[in-house]
Amino acid sequence: MIAVMHAATLSRDSVDSIDPLLQAGSIADGIEHLSDQLTPAVIRAARLDAKGRADLDRIEYALGTIGKALILTDYAIDENKDMDKLQAFRESQQR
Image 1 (cartoon, rainbow, N blue to C red):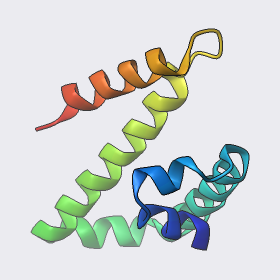
Image 2 (image 1 turned 30 degrees about the horizontal axis):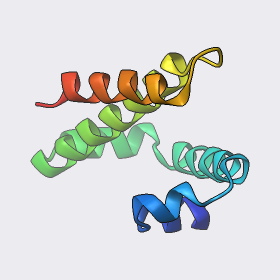
Image 3 (image 1 turned 180 degrees about the horizontal axis):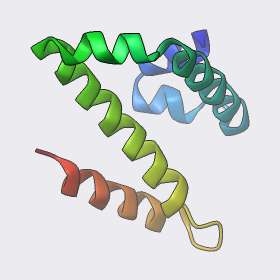
């Protein structure tokens, strides 16, 4: 979890220098930890407030981006094509 939070504060170049396998494990740990905190009570409370609803929208967008990244990353093609697909998806989702 700390590595996930720490990675979020790093520049893109710093994140790229982290071992991808360690980074994947750290992200998985962080997401599992956060998913335990997103209880129905938290969601219901957030829906009652404008900022809370905006936070839920941000969570949904982030999860959608993660899902698309997992789906669109094709092991048979090169990384640049993967990044192009993911960037196109992100651009299509911007409000």
